[in-house]
Length: 290
Image 1 (cartoon, one colour):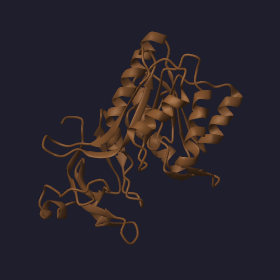
Image 2 (image 1 turned 90 degrees about the vertical axis):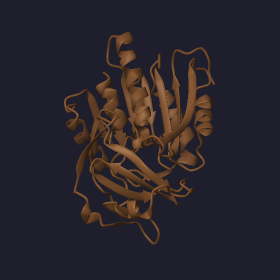
Image 3 (image 1 turned 120 degrees about the vertical axis):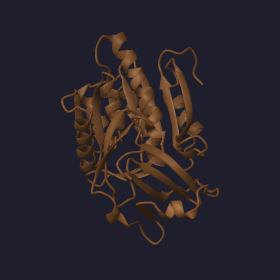
């Protein structure tokens, strides 16, 4: 597929086989409890594999470039094999980037100005890039200074180095409370909270304990005419309905519609889709709240 350097090749036996541009990788996938479709020789032919049994480690990591660039959903990303098995992009988020971009472009035309988008737990910036490309101004927040720098590199790869964006490396709750004091408001909020995380000063984030507070703070920094909220999660047990309920109870009086579903890794026709997290999103303008 032109402009898409990612595809799921196979999954099963608790693993997934993926192609990221020229590199084929085998990594853990707890939900892939079925049998693989491809023969073992195809899996063994991967450039590198990652395992968590007995400690987190790459096998044949030296077969990978130090870093490489792929295009996905019309956006370019720099990839690199990290010590945690991540690469710097979550392909299951592609659909959400497309939806966000469409909504931002519509709002920019309607408002006659760039909508203000806040991206929290923003990782390497996929949602930030999608919003900027569609005409938003953005604030990109992540606790990891290294990930914020990685996101800035991705912005440059997409010709967005001069786009209207603030890059913030800070604990999300500290940042939101400071924005409240300063009176800054946002038309849209995007967030992908971790199951467990640590802030720059050792702050601990556990999603089960913190998510309601996070959403309360998000609501408090939204403008008087909010546009959308996009909540995604990779936490086991946080199903699409759980995320939808969080939005419904967090925004009970906001007119609009809540949708929810699974994030999926996909490949060519005939390759089984692999569930890889959940999403829920609220958007202004519809007549009902689900």
